[in-house]
Length: 530
Image (cartoon, rainbow, N blue to C red; front, side, top):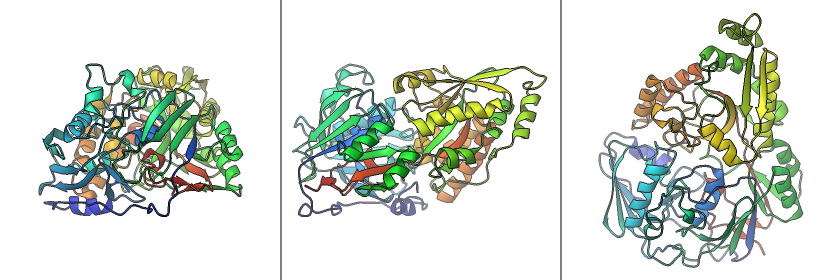
């Protein structure tokens, strides 16, 4: 799902009626839950800082969702729920969204959270977040009074309620961050004053993040936990050992399929794939379309035909991952079969290479492939497989590793790559997580998970921009289907598989984070059985 069902039914009708949401009952009553305890999360993701207003990705999103509140939140389906905003309402033309903030909400320094903080924070996201399409339709943020936020848009924005949730639009204290420094490099991003259920007390990059309960949190009686420790391990094997020994109680975003199969056999651990509906994670091979050889679409197509997706999903991933053929996951309402698939065909691969002047009787082609570090089966193993697969059609591939995520990120975002493995999320709606990869306007040097392929097709831009503002779901599906067909024909990216994310947790963990955002959403309702 992409749009919340209740929202889409109302919002997608011509002349959409006003939508107002009131506070709902908590998922678990305080009488049932036990307070206290420390939840230790095992993680292989290592954030540079903790401010999700200017940084995307899992590494930042998980801690940031605990440190910062957002206006809305989501449960296990795509229906928006109150969070910092207790109610919201659309104008008749769906171009104005008015939200009412909770009374008495405070930042971690005790200062009140006001509408002025909210509109300043949304402005920071609009100007600095790599997902530039998230708030692109917004013309103005207004604060008519301390408890009211008004978002004015140029046209209907089907994804706006999703944008206001998870860690996409954190609410920052203006009086702390608006200090004249560049928000993207502000040292306060390391130990930020937040607005969420937990406050950060220690951040040792590459080691751990310690979050403690904020007693002044605006949802009475929450959070239940005293502390969350996100312990960062060198690799997934180390994290799994910590889980098995009891050193950690939860391992979210685990994609090592052999490790998942191993943990499924444990009698005291629960393994689930719930909590990733909003993410829509894809594993793909990206091309630098400005590379002398890779600028030729025939070479990119030839590489695609040489890769056997079935081998990847069945042999490398123990049958837990699904083949991917386009910019969205199979569960998306925008998924279409009418795309160029590039099913495994060595003869087609060799013929296209020969047509482009490479292979037998032509030039020798040597390429380099990068991959995200610390993600063995989904990234390194597939990169090694691509090297072996392309050797069969005469392409010599060198696999280049990166010592850490920032190194890989810098290489890719500065276009210092030929090909790279990558993992990119749909983020619930194509406006948020898909358009950003293909729009000409989102070729932004130095920003990872923008259009780092430097791909530009004006027809794709027109289709995606139209789909991003179209209020009718069926018409949006048609527009995206056309865009996806053109993208797969141009092939700036070869889609390989959907990432089989799972969460593993001990029997002590109650009310685990299985919302559409999982641990990338607030964990104020998680508790430990003492």
